[in-house]
Image 1 (tube, helix red, strand yellow):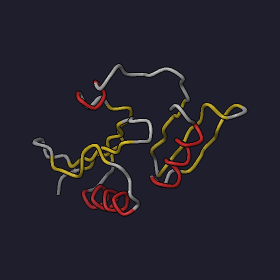
Image 2 (image 1 turned 45 degrees about the vertical axis):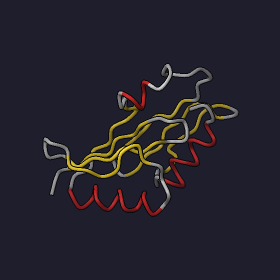
Image 3 (image 1 turned 120 degrees about the vertical axis):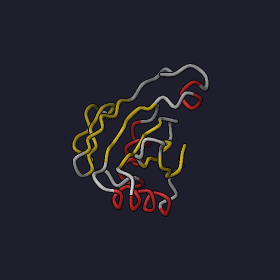
Image 4 (image 1 turned 90 degrees about the horizontal axis):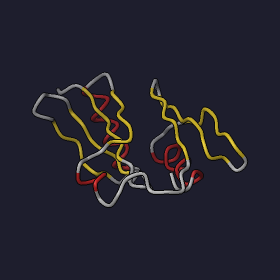
Length: 117
């Protein structure tokens, strides 16, 4: 994350995570959690990926699995209503899993996956 405060606001206000802790003054590292998912956030000053390779190759920064088809669909609808930016909207993969990919303010790709219907 280039701006830790912006990232923290995105995960809590848009994605519904709660702050477990934030470390540093000002904070530069922390953990957010939602249900049983925990993500570590860290501020960095240099680009992590070169050019557009992250989006082009769908290089994920995190992957979160939900336990039901209803849960993945509802989460997608909740995020859509909250105005979250998507790299990929809800779709069924050829192997049967339903997925969508959220785009965070720094361009990180966060995959959410659940069983097909």
